[in-house]
Picture 1 (cartoon, one colour):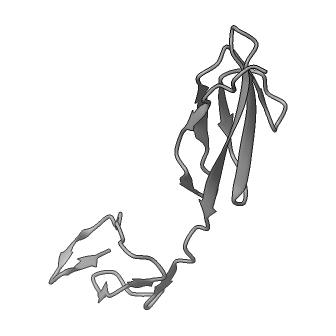
Picture 2 (cartoon, rainbow, N blue to C red):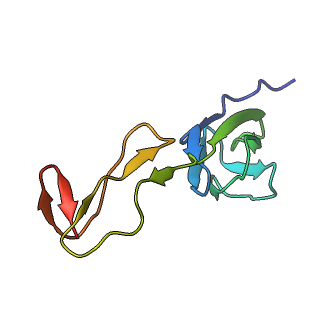
Length: 117
């Protein structure tokens, strides 16, 4: 009986919805993934948490298997509140919620910590 080989999968194990990750199997010479691919490297874009499996064979005919779970995190539900109508020269304050950090891209001039639009 032949000994099994050590197969390893590397890649990002956590992504956000809509992203992709590249998974790479090492330790053998031929590979067959659970999605039907037969290359050492695959790029996947799961819509939910998914476990990928690879069966591999070394040059000596010995085989091995590995699995890798990619966790898909949902995008945050961001809400912006504040006055949506102002007159020219007025200031308003907009408040974002639903996320952890925010990056604003607002054209205009500073208005005592707010922006003049």
